[in-house]
Amino acid sequence: MGSQKMQAQLWSIAAQDWADYQETTLLPVFEQIAHDFSQIPARALLDVGCGSGLFCQLALQQGLNVSGLDATAELITIAQRKAPNGHFTTGDMEEMPYPDHSFDLVTGINSFQYAASPVQALKEAYRVLKPTGKLVVAIWGKAQECQAAVYLKALGALMPPPPPGTPGPFALSEDGALEKLVGDAGFQPGMRQRVSCPFVYPDLHTALKGLLSAGPAQRAIGNTSYEAAAEAVTNAIAPFRTELGGYRMGNTFYILEATK
Image (cartoon, rainbow, N blue to C red; front, side):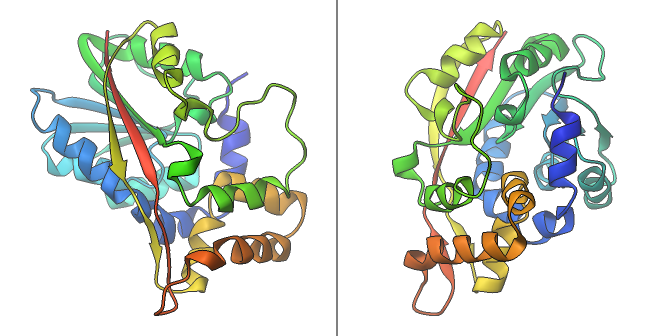
């Protein structure tokens, strides 16, 4: 069974808030990847877990032929509106609706870890890539490099206990873990780089709108209440309040390139 049904239920609830308040916090990662692939002769890009389409919008500006896949119809609708020249569809990342060897580039930005089977999702990325294609995966850095880890921990306390052996949000950030995963899917891991990606909000209202829009936050809300989740997040991010009343959480993301 793939991940689409469960993830669509979670991410559809506050899809517009994600697009309006949270997706832009990932802009440093999007811009770094867009800059990197602007140097290679590629035309066809698939963004897996494309969300509300901001990265796809950047890729279109680079002149690529862009497709986006996401579990959530509401996010796809926003993405299509944001990047009208892109080709967007809903589907399972574990069973992508594309022919073999369709793309020069496949990106997964903070997405493959949400798959029911990340290695199967990456095998699908391998399948749809051309023989000379490239994979780019972006994930959280280690917990000690991400101040947003305290927000994730606060939400985790509001969720049901995960099944034994379930990896945490930073499991792939450990040394060699992501490289092993993409290697298990058939890829040759290449260069890994670090990108600073602070989450910055002008006030508490904006911070809560953004941070509570993500799928894991909606799982916590569903298990308790919006009020409980908002209180937990407000307390967790209090140390990151700025003198002007905004919030800034410093984070690191890892970007790994791999080839077939």
